[in-house]
Image 1 (tube, rainbow, N blue to C red):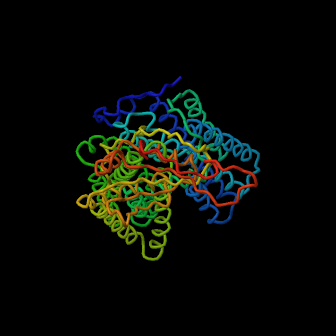
Image 2: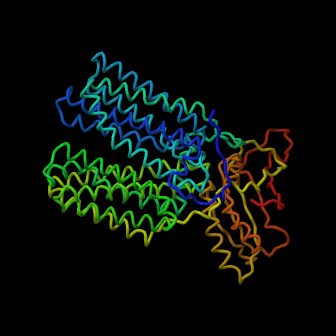
Image 3: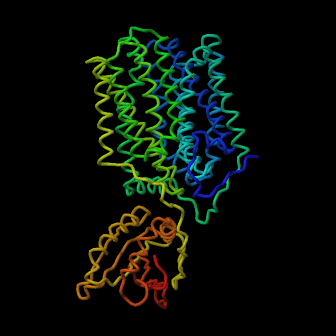
Amino acid sequence: MLQATTAPADDPPPVSALAPFHFPVFRSIWFASVLSNLGGLIQTVGASWMMTSIADSAHMVALVQTSVALPIVLLSLFAGAMADNLDRRKVMLGAQIYMLIVSTALTVCAYFGLITPWLLLVFTFLIGCGAAFNGPAWQASVGDMVPRAHLPGAVAINSMGFNIARSVGPAIGGAIVAAAGAAAAFAVNAASYISLIVVLQRWRPVRPPQLLPRETLGIAVAAGIRYVSMSPAIRRVLARGTVFGIGASSVMALLPLVAKDLLAGGPLTYGVLLGAFGVGAVGGALSSARLRQRLASEGLAKVACLAFAIAAAISGLSHQLWLTLLMMLIAGAAWVLTLSTLNVSVQLSTPRWVVARALSIYQVTTFGGMAAGSWLWGIISASDGVRLALLAAALVMLICTAMGYRLPLAETTDLNLDPLRRWQEPATSVAVEPRTGPVVVTIEYRIRDEDVLEFLATMAERRRIRKRDGAMNWMLLRDLNEPDVWMERYTTPTWLEYIRHNNRMTQDDANIPQRLRELHQGPGLPVVRRLIERQTAALPAGHISTPHDLAEPLTDPSRSS
């Protein structure tokens, strides 16, 4: 049985790129995931080749790649919500078992000659759905497998594993199809899930106790979108990731044309270039730990984006195989370093309760940028040539580099996003249930004139945190008769959402309420009132009013909200 490994949050940064392999859980799941990714790429090769033999249209062949990618765009956010609300190990296990079943059915249908073009697309799409649900759970689980200090290295190693599979997978898939047919490639893919299923079945992560009911899927998705939209650090990553995806997709999308048109080569040349990109990606992952010791996240992202721009431009101008191979090595390394840096920035800027949803949104935006970029560079290369397309892509990568001066990545090493856990559910005179609501909360402060500007600046951050964590209709009010009286007001849909809202405050957020208490000049702490919204109505004849009927304010000045 694989037990979760825990370590102090203040462990020293890793000195080796392979340090995450010291943790047995990560090591076992990583190797099994590489095999699974390898099987997936072999399956894609088999599906593409089979489509060429059963369909007359090149459009149908192209749709194979679309059917693989489309589920990620459509389902990632829902998958992230599931990964945050359920046991991530079980989500991954369920996704792997589901893909094993679908892949086995595809193998059987292919073996007995039952596959039609549209049925093949359906099977490919269904396998892609499993991958879409597995991705956010797997990425978010890395933080459960290694300590925070090792997270950047673990994410880089994950990228390295995928690029290793991508480097050798197509070649292995082509050999299997040539030797035994597409059905054999599908069978190999089905078998590739077994090792990961076994490892996940043995893993027993330590999960914090769930004190509140799970969010419904719709509420969970909305909470994830709201958190990301109210988090400037994550919004910067999304903007950078989208632009990077648009520019960086050029190399992979145009690589066959680079081999054919610019280097006058054939399939072997394309394979060698693709292998060089993969080797560069592995090298980038292995060098990431040392680079992170010398460069901050923003510095590393700028260097990697600039290197990719240079590689794309020179690849567009080069007619020498050796020079283009060198540029592919650089592009592969820059690809892994940039994507892993952005991924780590999202993970370290997000508390554990919403990390899978934040990662899924990052994945959708970056992957969407890659899809849009592939389409864009294809159009430009068809009308103006591969060289101009690669030079234009290099310009986009220079823009991505320049964005670092206006939208720099946040330095997250000192953030403490563990739950604050100081808040306790208040006792109320009026009986409440989880579904009771809407709940209106007011907090009254007394602020001196000389402190007003600082108070307003602190309240601006308070507003962002409140809305990020689920508060609605937030407003700040000032008493016209007593100018030193200020009132913060917000609502939550139910009492349960009010509890969730207060439990989401992190250690890093604690300085805001502390500063507000210091600015408050009234007797005691700021006065907190909790009220339930009620509609007016006539009471039944003979009914005696009670506090339950009148919905008296729920006041507990001794507790902060």
